Amino acid sequence: MKYRILIFTFTLLSTISVFAQPADMTGSLNSFSFELYKQLKSDTENLFFSPLSIDVALLMVREGAEKGTKSEFDKVLHIDSNMKPNDVHDFILNLKSFKDSTNQLRIANAIWIKRGYKIIPNFQHSIQTNYLSNVFQVNFSDPDMSAGKINKWTARKTNNLINKAISPAQINSSTKLILTNAIYFIDKWDKQFEPYLTHRDDFYGINGDTVKINFMHDTELMNYFENDDFQFISKNYKGNDKSFCVILPKKREGISAVEKIMDKPILDSIFKLVVLTDVELSLPKFKMETSYTLNESLLQLGLKKAFTREADFSGISSPSQLKISEVLHKTYIEINEVNTKAAGVTAIDCTDGLMLPDPQRKIFKADHPFLFMIIDSKTKGIIFMGRFVKQQ
Image 1 (tube, rainbow, N blue to C red):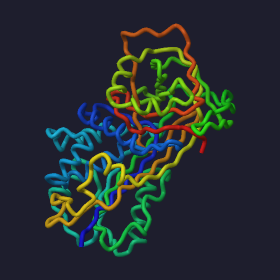
Image 2 (cartoon, rainbow, N blue to C red):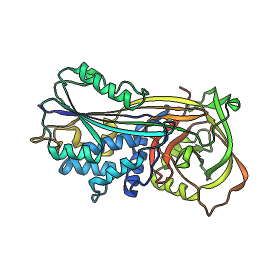
Image 3 (cartoon, one colour):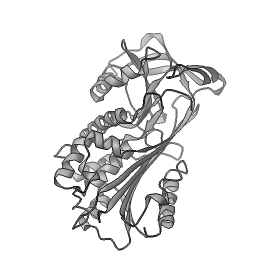
Image 4 (cartoon, rainbow, N blue to C red):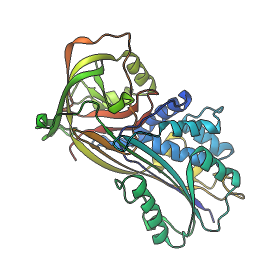
């Protein structure tokens, strides 16, 4: 019988505080982020996910992959063959926030092993050492009990923003391993929106409909860029080590064209060209919850053998009969006048001491479909990204 690995990733959204991520890990993460974005987006729906959460969960499974299976992981995740195991450790550790309880990022990993099932010690050591992962023995013969334990862990690690990571129906007698990653983030804006300025205005949705929604308003110096196709701003969170970035097409119906061209090199060039500018910002106040099964998207990106009988996870168990059954992902984000909270976030620091503020105030009114990201200001790594195209 072919066994399965059930990977469940979920995330909460907000801003991440990062100190010194390895540059190659950031580049890999951002390349993967844009490619997965294009796989997940639909023409008419909102989108929100944590590339970081998915990336870390897949990297954990990669630790036990061998030969052609591992090569596919490396291609999909843009991993340099020279990457060292401790690079991931530094990458995760540097992302974690050690600030006070009002501004924090928490990243947690766990591997849940069927009681009595033997895994290779080197794999377990790597997961615990390089991914700071907990290891739990569970009784998968009792799906209700084992799902309950995983969901209790999920709720605790996400401050109850996500309470159900997995259902008992997704566990059966062939389940041998479940790997989980949870990211919780909360951070206050560096300059908060004044609640009395929030008012209802028209939002021009992707389906051509116009609805009244709440817009927050703020005027401040922000890192700003524009070209013929779009405007870009980044609004800082407390500490200025993370930011909320918005890419707003200049045409109301222009999001598809912008999405087609956006990738890591374009984002890199934006970061180099931003100028500290006086910006009058109008931003929707919104909350979003999403849930995805990522199997098909990962297959399209090139991760194929891992889902089949050809999978080689002999670095996890030997003899290996493991394959990936499902890759699940849940997210939550809430943006209001005071803060952002959810799962997996990045903050961007776009200031350049050699650039002077534009004396002319820019109007940035996000009243039609736009892309957004939470980015780490130091490394420019993407923690969360999505699109807002209609009121949910």
